[in-house]
Structures are given as structure tokens and as C-alpha cells.
Image: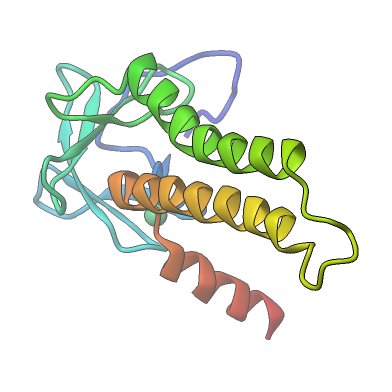
Length: 159
Ligand SMILES: [Zn+2]
């Protein structure tokens, strides 16, 4: 098996590839099937050699990765383009409420001697964290990041 990084190679059924989902395991062809399975997260992929793509059918719509000869390209959701519009919307979703509350706390600060005068600042921070958390959760849902598999790996590693 030629592992030299100098020569890029095509996606084929004979070699192992890094798992694009967990990035820990290796995916290899399952016997008698045009499918690959990860030895770590157990995710199953169908192979399309013509377009050099693998598809993860266990979620709908499926995620697709294209092999570029070196590594997998960023996952695409079948039929969906995650463009800059979505990224911008996510940034606005996190920053807009946070800055509203932050500006309020900055321009109308409670008198420092009032009890609980620190609440607006904590509130600003909580707003930021909770909105960021929602975005992270959505990303985990979209890309099916195998948190359980990572968790297992961490526990195995520590034992
Ligand atoms: Zn995997």
C-alpha cells in the first residue's frame, strides 16, 4: 500500500481512508458491499467511485464528502449549500442580542452601590454563551459529530 503523501491517489475499494466523521478511525470496504465502515465510530458510508464521493446515508438529508486525492473535503449536505448567508446569520444570532444587552449595561449602568449591580454583566455573558451554545448544537446536529464516540475514546485513553 503506497502511503506516500507525494502522490495523490484516487478513491478506491482496496485502501483504508481516514474517517471523515470522527477523524479518529479508519474506514475500509465492507466485504461484498460497495460500502465502507469506520472501525471507530461504526458509521457506514456508501461509495461512489465515479464522482470520488462517499455518502453517509444514516441521516437525512445525507452528508457527502469528496475525496480530493489527499483528504476529504468539507462535508456537504446533499442538495444544500451552506453559504456565507448562513454563517452571517449565525454570527448575527450570537452577537446581536449580546451587544444589545451589553450596550444597555454600558450606557445605563446600575449604581455600583445597588445590590446585585453586577447582574447586567453576567446577563450579557449568559446571553452570549446561550446563543453560542444554540449555534454549536445546530452544527453538531447538522454534521452529526459523534460526541459519544469521542467520549468513549477519551475514557479508553484515560484507562
Ligand atoms: Zn469514524
